[in-house]
Length: 131
Image 1 (tube, one colour):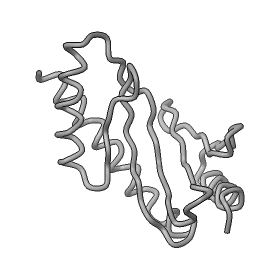
Image 2 (cartoon, rainbow, N blue to C red):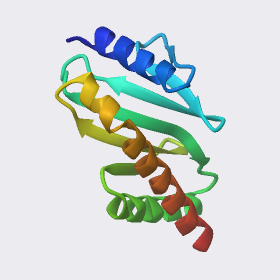
Image 3 (tube, rainbow, N blue to C red):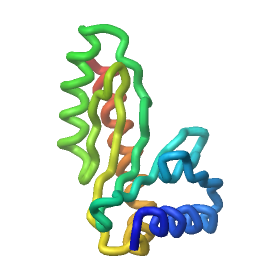
Image 4 (cartoon, helix red, strand yellow):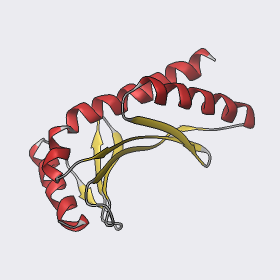
């Protein structure tokens, strides 16, 4: 199954869950939860790879803050299973990256994956506020 079909199937799943997904110009699924924008990506070259992304949730405003971001991101990544938190240019992103043999498997772990993604963002924010 290719990226386009996996993306379409996942968008239909999200629609059935009550979300309003859109497929963007890159063929990825964009959706909102609680006013925040997330993306679901399937990989054209690796049909088993699935990624949920919460992009640009924290702006990096100085080099001093960048050092704190790097430390907090490493700690949040270490604390929360399958989550990655990392700087991208002057923002911080969080992702959940998994290998799923089918898009149906991605659907089965969606809620738990979103919980982990939110937990990683919260862990990062807590560490930033404490620094």
